[in-house]
View 1 (cartoon, rainbow over the protein chains, first blue to last red):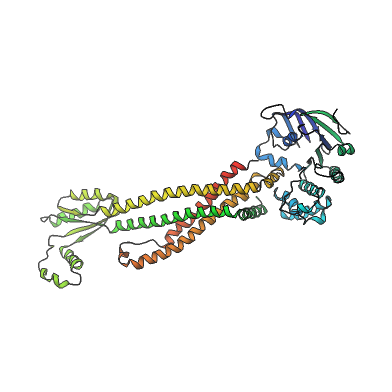
View 2: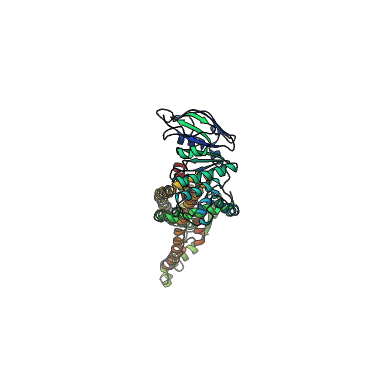
Length: 228
Length: 302
């Protein structure tokens, strides 16, 4: 599903942000990518979304070689990857329903399909009654659920979550993790980038640890590797 | 492209304009001023050209013959003239006709003053050809040609009317061209700025759209709609104003200057606006497209 071969990314001057990374993630996996700030997690995400080009190496996602991809095809790659952010990134001037419908609108889904699909997604994340609420009327946990619904509404095979619990309290964090696990069970490949130790330790999933741009460990059922 | 996408882009385009009223208004105003001036100059210039063309049909060259010229010679002169490419019409004026016209022009209602000349036509031997040309710019060459024909005594012509009109028209053309180019540039600049503000306001939304896999066209269409709408509205307003003004001015001129009506004939509203309306809409829409494209190239890269 996702293959990185000897991938490095060096910014204009200085040490590489990502250094010679080799990584393989299978279809249907649940993977944590952990590391401190500055470890190269954000760079890695940007490489996967083709917001950045690697200085060296080859990235293949869902059978698509990113290096050979024409600029015009980038939208099609991004439709394969649903993204969730720490700061939710919902549109503040639109209600919950319109926020999720927006994701379908931009990939030119017919209105008829949108009317059917949005309520279904809202039920899945447990917010069926709040479809008329605006983001500022929701709690952090609820906003993140809306963001997850938005990321998944177009049925991407991959869900990429960048610090999804970064702005949430432990209770809400746990709920979001359970939701992501549920989504994974339905067949979506889930990649969670985080430095939330408690969550990583509790979930007992594959954990890839990055330090200074290099993968230092990759464990099948791992926990957070503590500094030391 | 899907129908729902077209509607979506249109709606978002209008929302952009609404959110950004002041700048949109400034852009509409500039484009309106530009197209108003353009329309005004066009109306004046086409009428001027029309007048010149009419003048070409009426400005005549009068050819007098030598006193001893025979009828055959006069006939031959006529034949030679008819062979010229610029030749329009020819009319033979006999001495009697010439005298009649002269009397009409100079004695008017006091025909009795002319009685003294009754049986002694002072214009005997003043028979002539009255020639009009279909191309006044060839007048000089034509006159030289006729003066060299045998039996021609004198050629009367006016070389000032046509030249003055042509010169005047050319001057207006240059000035209007310069003003229009400046205003076009200002219009494009303002639209591109208006669009840039719209993009800045929607920066977050555009970022999300890109991550969701929206195609370039989908992201750009609303801004294109915004630019085109501003351009079209900017074109329609001056057209409407010009239409009303032009209609009134025609009526006014024809009423006030009844006497010149025979000399000056103006183009009808329909004739002028059949060209002006499509031209203004194309230019207005074009400014919109160019203005929005410039900004999108700079600020909307995937």
